Image 1 (cartoon, rainbow, N blue to C red):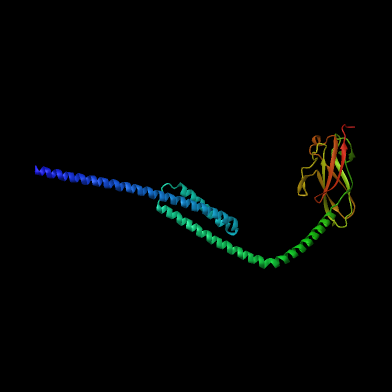
Image 2: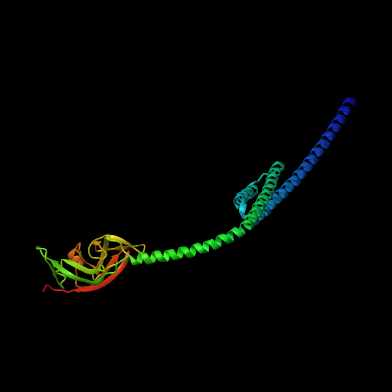
Length: 301
Protein backbone atom coordinates (compact mmCIF):
# COMPACT_ATOMS: atom_id res chain seq x y z
CA UNK A 1 0.00 0.00 0.00
CA UNK A 2 2.83 2.33 0.89
CA UNK A 3 4.48 1.69 -2.52
CA UNK A 4 1.31 2.56 -4.37
CA UNK A 5 0.97 5.74 -2.36
CA UNK A 6 4.55 6.75 -3.28
CA UNK A 7 4.01 6.03 -6.98
CA UNK A 8 0.85 8.10 -6.92
CA UNK A 9 2.75 11.01 -5.38
CA UNK A 10 5.51 10.84 -7.97
CA UNK A 11 2.94 10.76 -10.77
CA UNK A 12 1.25 13.86 -9.40
CA UNK A 13 4.61 15.65 -9.28
CA UNK A 14 5.37 14.68 -12.89
CA UNK A 15 1.97 15.83 -14.04
CA UNK A 16 2.48 19.13 -12.23
CA UNK A 17 5.91 19.59 -13.80
CA UNK A 18 4.52 18.73 -17.23
CA UNK A 19 1.76 21.29 -16.76
CA UNK A 20 4.25 23.92 -15.72
CA UNK A 21 6.38 23.10 -18.78
CA UNK A 22 3.42 23.35 -21.12
CA UNK A 23 2.43 26.68 -19.59
CA UNK A 24 6.01 27.93 -19.90
CA UNK A 25 6.25 26.80 -23.53
CA UNK A 26 2.96 28.48 -24.33
CA UNK A 27 4.10 31.70 -22.73
CA UNK A 28 7.41 31.54 -24.59
CA UNK A 29 5.64 30.87 -27.87
CA UNK A 30 3.25 33.74 -27.25
CA UNK A 31 6.11 36.03 -26.33
CA UNK A 32 8.05 35.03 -29.46
CA UNK A 33 4.97 35.63 -31.59
CA UNK A 34 4.51 39.09 -30.15
CA UNK A 35 8.19 39.86 -30.65
CA UNK A 36 7.98 38.62 -34.26
CA UNK A 37 4.97 40.83 -34.96
CA UNK A 38 6.72 43.81 -33.42
CA UNK A 39 9.85 43.15 -35.51
CA UNK A 40 7.73 42.85 -38.66
CA UNK A 41 6.08 46.19 -37.90
CA UNK A 42 9.47 47.82 -37.35
CA UNK A 43 10.81 46.40 -40.62
CA UNK A 44 7.69 47.56 -42.44
CA UNK A 45 8.15 51.03 -41.01
CA UNK A 46 11.79 51.02 -42.12
CA UNK A 47 10.68 49.87 -45.59
CA UNK A 48 8.30 52.84 -45.81
CA UNK A 49 11.10 55.09 -44.60
CA UNK A 50 13.38 53.74 -47.35
CA UNK A 51 10.68 54.42 -49.99
CA UNK A 52 10.16 57.95 -48.65
CA UNK A 53 13.90 58.65 -48.71
CA UNK A 54 14.11 57.39 -52.27
CA UNK A 55 11.13 59.53 -53.32
CA UNK A 56 12.70 62.61 -51.72
CA UNK A 57 16.01 61.79 -53.39
CA UNK A 58 14.25 61.49 -56.76
CA UNK A 59 12.73 64.97 -56.31
CA UNK A 60 16.15 66.27 -55.36
CA UNK A 61 17.66 64.76 -58.53
CA UNK A 62 14.86 66.28 -60.66
CA UNK A 63 15.79 69.72 -59.34
CA UNK A 64 19.48 69.02 -59.86
CA UNK A 65 18.87 68.00 -63.48
CA UNK A 66 17.25 71.38 -64.13
CA UNK A 67 20.01 73.35 -62.39
CA UNK A 68 23.16 71.35 -63.11
CA UNK A 69 22.90 71.03 -66.88
CA UNK A 70 26.63 70.37 -67.18
CA UNK A 71 26.20 66.89 -65.64
CA UNK A 72 22.53 66.27 -66.50
CA UNK A 73 23.39 63.00 -68.27
CA UNK A 74 24.93 61.45 -65.14
CA UNK A 75 22.09 62.81 -63.01
CA UNK A 76 19.54 61.26 -65.36
CA UNK A 77 21.26 57.87 -64.99
CA UNK A 78 21.16 58.16 -61.20
CA UNK A 79 17.50 59.19 -61.29
CA UNK A 80 16.66 56.09 -63.36
CA UNK A 81 18.44 53.98 -60.75
CA UNK A 82 16.33 55.62 -57.99
CA UNK A 83 13.10 54.90 -59.86
CA UNK A 84 14.14 51.26 -60.28
CA UNK A 85 14.93 50.99 -56.56
CA UNK A 86 11.54 52.48 -55.60
CA UNK A 87 9.75 49.86 -57.69
CA UNK A 88 11.99 47.13 -56.33
CA UNK A 89 11.34 48.08 -52.69
CA UNK A 90 7.58 48.36 -53.24
CA UNK A 91 7.46 44.89 -54.81
CA UNK A 92 9.53 43.29 -52.02
CA UNK A 93 7.12 41.23 -49.85
CA UNK A 94 9.49 39.55 -47.40
CA UNK A 95 11.55 42.25 -45.78
CA UNK A 96 14.38 41.75 -43.31
CA UNK A 97 17.15 43.74 -41.69
CA UNK A 98 19.67 42.68 -44.35
CA UNK A 99 17.49 43.97 -47.19
CA UNK A 100 16.83 47.25 -45.36
CA UNK A 101 20.55 47.67 -44.79
CA UNK A 102 21.26 47.04 -48.49
CA UNK A 103 18.81 49.73 -49.60
CA UNK A 104 20.16 52.20 -47.07
CA UNK A 105 23.65 51.63 -48.50
CA UNK A 106 22.23 52.35 -51.97
CA UNK A 107 20.65 55.58 -50.71
CA UNK A 108 23.92 56.67 -49.11
CA UNK A 109 25.81 55.93 -52.35
CA UNK A 110 23.29 57.91 -54.42
CA UNK A 111 23.54 60.89 -52.07
CA UNK A 112 27.32 60.75 -52.28
CA UNK A 113 27.17 60.57 -56.09
CA UNK A 114 24.79 63.54 -56.12
CA UNK A 115 27.16 65.63 -53.99
CA UNK A 116 30.12 64.71 -56.20
CA UNK A 117 28.19 65.65 -59.35
CA UNK A 118 27.22 68.95 -57.71
CA UNK A 119 30.91 69.72 -57.15
CA UNK A 120 31.82 68.79 -60.72
CA UNK A 121 28.99 70.96 -62.12
CA UNK A 122 29.96 73.90 -59.94
CA UNK A 123 33.61 73.57 -60.99
CA UNK A 124 32.66 73.44 -64.65
CA UNK A 125 30.39 76.44 -64.24
CA UNK A 126 33.12 78.42 -62.50
CA UNK A 127 35.58 77.50 -65.26
CA UNK A 128 33.07 78.55 -67.91
CA UNK A 129 32.51 81.88 -66.19
CA UNK A 130 36.26 82.48 -66.16
CA UNK A 131 36.45 81.69 -69.86
CA UNK A 132 33.50 83.97 -70.61
CA UNK A 133 35.10 86.81 -68.67
CA UNK A 134 38.46 86.24 -70.37
CA UNK A 135 36.85 86.16 -73.83
CA UNK A 136 34.61 89.20 -73.46
CA UNK A 137 37.08 91.63 -75.00
CA UNK A 138 38.02 89.12 -77.68
CA UNK A 139 34.34 88.54 -78.50
CA UNK A 140 33.81 92.28 -78.81
CA UNK A 141 36.64 92.51 -81.32
CA UNK A 142 35.39 89.45 -83.16
CA UNK A 143 31.86 90.87 -83.33
CA UNK A 144 33.18 94.10 -84.80
CA UNK A 145 35.23 92.13 -87.31
CA UNK A 146 32.22 89.95 -88.09
CA UNK A 147 30.07 93.00 -88.76
CA UNK A 148 32.72 94.36 -91.07
CA UNK A 149 33.03 90.99 -92.83
CA UNK A 150 29.26 90.67 -93.12
CA UNK A 151 29.03 94.11 -94.68
CA UNK A 152 31.82 93.23 -97.10
CA UNK A 153 30.26 89.84 -97.86
CA UNK A 154 26.88 91.44 -98.45
CA UNK A 155 28.43 93.90 -100.87
CA UNK A 156 30.26 91.08 -102.63
CA UNK A 157 27.07 89.04 -102.88
CA UNK A 158 25.20 92.01 -104.28
CA UNK A 159 27.97 92.58 -106.80
CA UNK A 160 28.04 88.88 -107.68
CA UNK A 161 24.26 88.85 -108.08
CA UNK A 162 24.45 91.94 -110.27
CA UNK A 163 27.12 90.32 -112.43
CA UNK A 164 25.19 87.05 -112.68
CA UNK A 165 22.03 88.87 -113.71
CA UNK A 166 24.04 90.89 -116.17
CA UNK A 167 25.06 87.60 -117.79
CA UNK A 168 21.44 86.65 -118.45
CA UNK A 169 20.31 87.22 -122.02
CA UNK A 170 16.78 88.63 -122.28
CA UNK A 171 15.53 88.01 -125.82
CA UNK A 172 13.60 90.55 -127.86
CA UNK A 173 11.10 90.15 -130.72
CA UNK A 174 9.80 86.92 -129.15
CA UNK A 175 7.23 85.19 -131.36
CA UNK A 176 5.68 81.72 -131.38
CA UNK A 177 3.46 80.08 -134.02
CA UNK A 178 2.34 76.79 -135.48
CA UNK A 179 4.23 75.52 -138.52
CA UNK A 180 4.13 72.64 -140.94
CA UNK A 181 7.43 71.17 -142.06
CA UNK A 182 7.08 69.63 -145.49
CA UNK A 183 9.03 66.65 -146.78
CA UNK A 184 11.22 69.01 -148.74
CA UNK A 185 12.21 70.74 -145.52
CA UNK A 186 10.27 73.87 -146.29
CA UNK A 187 8.63 75.46 -143.24
CA UNK A 188 5.14 76.90 -143.68
CA UNK A 189 3.26 78.77 -140.93
CA UNK A 190 -0.25 77.62 -140.09
CA UNK A 191 -2.89 78.62 -137.58
CA UNK A 192 -4.65 75.23 -137.80
CA UNK A 193 -3.75 72.71 -135.11
CA UNK A 194 -4.51 69.73 -137.36
CA UNK A 195 -2.11 70.96 -140.03
CA UNK A 196 0.71 71.94 -137.65
CA UNK A 197 3.58 69.51 -137.22
CA UNK A 198 5.68 71.72 -134.92
CA UNK A 199 5.65 74.92 -132.92
CA UNK A 200 8.34 77.46 -133.84
CA UNK A 201 9.60 79.92 -131.24
CA UNK A 202 11.84 82.70 -132.58
CA UNK A 203 13.57 85.58 -130.82
CA UNK A 204 16.58 87.86 -131.03
CA UNK A 205 19.47 87.52 -128.57
CA UNK A 206 20.78 90.99 -127.72
CA UNK A 207 24.39 92.12 -127.48
CA UNK A 208 25.89 91.81 -123.98
CA UNK A 209 29.37 93.25 -123.26
CA UNK A 210 29.71 91.40 -119.93
CA UNK A 211 28.94 87.91 -121.20
CA UNK A 212 31.94 86.04 -122.61
CA UNK A 213 31.83 84.56 -126.09
CA UNK A 214 30.94 80.89 -126.27
CA UNK A 215 28.04 78.44 -126.23
CA UNK A 216 24.77 79.52 -124.62
CA UNK A 217 21.70 77.31 -124.15
CA UNK A 218 18.11 78.57 -124.41
CA UNK A 219 15.14 76.52 -123.23
CA UNK A 220 11.54 76.76 -124.40
CA UNK A 221 8.47 75.64 -122.46
CA UNK A 222 5.15 75.43 -124.33
CA UNK A 223 1.86 74.77 -122.52
CA UNK A 224 -1.18 73.74 -124.56
CA UNK A 225 -4.72 74.96 -123.69
CA UNK A 226 -5.06 72.10 -121.15
CA UNK A 227 -1.89 73.20 -119.34
CA UNK A 228 0.09 70.18 -120.56
CA UNK A 229 3.74 70.64 -121.54
CA UNK A 230 4.22 70.03 -125.24
CA UNK A 231 7.28 68.13 -126.42
CA UNK A 232 10.27 66.83 -124.45
CA UNK A 233 10.09 65.35 -120.93
CA UNK A 234 13.35 67.03 -119.90
CA UNK A 235 13.56 69.31 -116.86
CA UNK A 236 15.80 72.19 -115.78
CA UNK A 237 16.49 73.80 -112.41
CA UNK A 238 14.84 77.20 -111.93
CA UNK A 239 15.04 78.84 -108.50
CA UNK A 240 15.67 75.46 -106.83
CA UNK A 241 12.66 73.91 -108.57
CA UNK A 242 12.49 71.44 -111.44
CA UNK A 243 10.68 72.86 -114.46
CA UNK A 244 9.63 70.70 -117.43
CA UNK A 245 10.67 72.08 -120.81
CA UNK A 246 9.59 71.44 -124.39
CA UNK A 247 12.87 71.90 -126.29
CA UNK A 248 16.30 73.53 -126.10
CA UNK A 249 18.85 75.03 -128.45
CA UNK A 250 22.56 75.70 -128.00
CA UNK A 251 23.92 78.68 -129.89
CA UNK A 252 27.41 80.11 -130.22
CA UNK A 253 27.25 83.59 -128.76
CA UNK A 254 29.76 86.07 -130.14
CA UNK A 255 28.74 89.21 -128.26
CA UNK A 256 26.49 90.50 -130.98
CA UNK A 257 22.78 90.34 -131.76
CA UNK A 258 21.73 86.87 -132.89
CA UNK A 259 18.40 85.51 -134.15
CA UNK A 260 17.43 82.11 -132.72
CA UNK A 261 14.55 79.78 -133.65
CA UNK A 262 13.65 76.68 -131.66
CA UNK A 263 11.28 74.04 -132.98
CA UNK A 264 9.06 72.13 -130.54
CA UNK A 265 7.93 68.75 -131.83
CA UNK A 266 5.09 67.02 -129.92
CA UNK A 267 5.59 63.53 -128.57
CA UNK A 268 1.94 62.74 -129.29
CA UNK A 269 0.49 65.19 -131.82
CA UNK A 270 -3.14 64.15 -131.32
CA UNK A 271 -2.92 64.60 -127.56
CA UNK A 272 -0.74 67.72 -127.45
CA UNK A 273 -1.95 69.77 -130.42
CA UNK A 274 -5.49 70.96 -129.74
CA UNK A 275 -7.54 74.03 -130.45
CA UNK A 276 -6.97 77.03 -128.22
CA UNK A 277 -4.38 79.36 -126.69
CA UNK A 278 -0.78 78.23 -126.07
CA UNK A 279 1.54 79.79 -123.49
CA UNK A 280 5.25 80.04 -124.29
CA UNK A 281 8.15 80.64 -121.86
CA UNK A 282 11.85 81.09 -122.63
CA UNK A 283 14.63 80.34 -120.09
CA UNK A 284 18.34 81.20 -119.92
CA UNK A 285 20.86 80.51 -117.14
CA UNK A 286 18.15 79.23 -114.77
CA UNK A 287 15.88 82.29 -115.22
CA UNK A 288 12.69 82.91 -117.12
CA UNK A 289 13.63 85.58 -119.66
CA UNK A 290 10.55 85.92 -121.84
CA UNK A 291 6.92 84.91 -122.37
CA UNK A 292 4.41 85.08 -125.20
CA UNK A 293 1.35 83.24 -126.45
CA UNK A 294 -0.39 82.26 -129.67
CA UNK A 295 -3.56 80.46 -130.85
CA UNK A 296 -4.19 77.38 -132.96
CA UNK A 297 -7.59 77.15 -134.56
CA UNK A 298 -9.76 74.24 -135.53
CA UNK A 299 -10.41 73.00 -139.03
CA UNK A 300 -8.00 72.25 -141.81
CA UNK A 301 -8.40 75.11 -144.26
